[in-house]
Amino acid sequence: MTHVKPRHRKPAIMIGRTEHEKLTRLAEGLVNRNPEVAEILLGELDRARVVDDVRVRDDVVRMNSTLRYVTDTGEDRTVTLVYPGEADIETGKVSILTPIGVALIGLSPGQTIDWQARDGRVHQLTVKSVTSFRGATESIRA
Image (cartoon, rainbow, N blue to C red; front, side, top):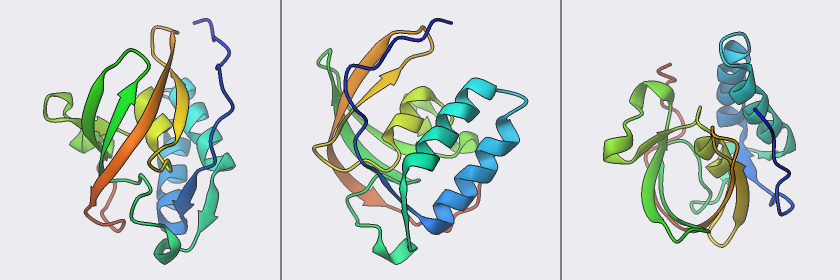
């Protein structure tokens, strides 16, 4: 797959310590089965500002957050970011182990990020709102 250079610098992201640890373990466990997604997720985790769980603002995208975003093509979607075992694109549940899922983690309303789809094309999305959060202590269902 050819990689296209992103159009913009990546925005600053924030992740709680517990979630950072869970996602790191998830990505490390994926290295042999899907190295490309594992590498992208580990890269996002490496660049994230890791804070105590209670310091993560309610409007930061994290696991089980429901958020609304718009794309550079005009698509306006509301999705929930979930672990792989909970993913269901028809009900708007997007896995963290997808290119768009990885792009969403740690973002806040108003932030824009480029992400590369599986077909190699680079897209851009902007988070408009983060509307709910069920809790960061749920287990990983891979």
